[in-house]
Image (cartoon, rainbow, N blue to C red):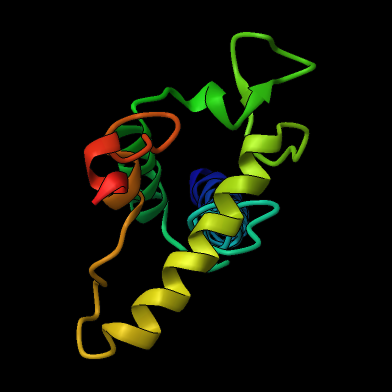
Length: 149
């Protein structure tokens, strides 16, 4: 009689182990699927409304470019970008409401044309925003002495 109970106990334990193994396998597969799906969403964000800059620009490259504009014009981000309508502490970078943003795009196109035409061999280009603005919102007029000569 004792052997019968031992055999049943072994049989039940085997079924439980098999069921647990099945559950672990299913759970592992679910975790793997979630992990692979989440990897597909970790790409760098794509930025909205880029009309002159490369649409595949990296976050780091975009931040460097924007800092160069700030330095070249001696301004802050809100010179070209409006406050977010949903959160006034943030800026709406995609909005075209500020005229300065459109002017900046025109200036970027102009400097690209100048650099492409006159400085073909120089990948970085010689003419930048700073070339004319020198850290000022508006380029200054040349001194009158220069104009009179």
